[in-house]
Length: 107
Image (cartoon, rainbow, N blue to C red; front, side, top):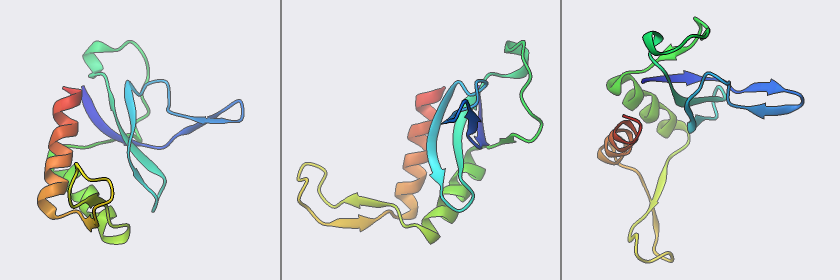
């Protein structure tokens, strides 16, 4: 599977993931309304995927997330077992871990 950045499609008045996205709806970028998802490798599919799809490797995805974080900081609880604990901004290490967890979950 390849990790890609894509935009949602409008189908019959509903905004949905394109049908060629296998796993989608991750890491919304409010700056340009793009999302991250996966598509099958070209050798595994019998259908068209637009050439405008942007393929992301690990470092590109990390850079994408850090760029979003600069404009719209990602937050996390300081204590995951206490839902009333304070919220803190993600660190660079948190973003790398988040991306790595996503990559591992889709492979």
